[in-house]
Length: 76
Image 1: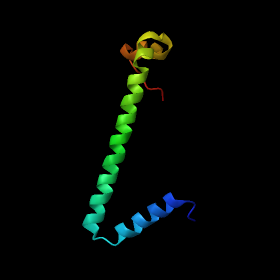
Image 2: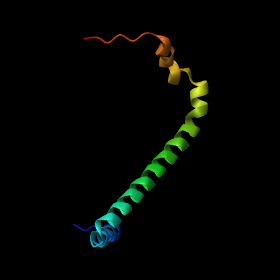
Image 3: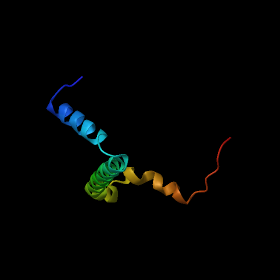
Image 4: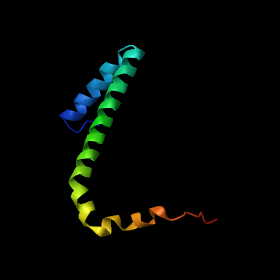
């Protein structure tokens, strides 16, 4: 069910891509995935930069890093 103009644009893009040869469809899919990954990476980097000062000053955020030097034993 089409809810708004954006849904219609998406549907038209999918239909148009479906008319292309498979190699071009694959190229489009790869570029879209690459674009999404870049945006995700960028937003994670921004979030990390915003929280950096908090991690430097708030011991509660880094409390469990004291265990990093401890040996790990798996319980079975």
